Length: 92
Image (cartoon, rainbow, N blue to C red; front, side, top):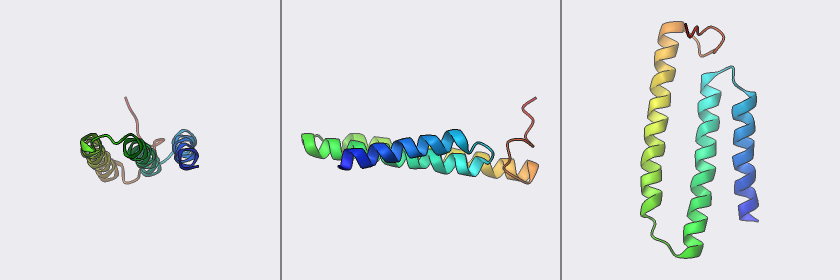
């Protein structure tokens, strides 16, 4: 039952990531939701197999770095364009 719940969390996060691509903040929140579901799946798997939890700490370090990088991009985008819409952001 728990595996189904975490898999459902993963797919809901992916659906939000694909469908709500207008705001950067919603995209970042859906990515964090996906990472949280992957973390919980890894935690349950490692508890069931009696593995060492060191890999989870490395995963959390990379997750925090990804979140900080995403927030810094969001802040710089809001400072330069005064919103987080992707339509107002010209890539050229």
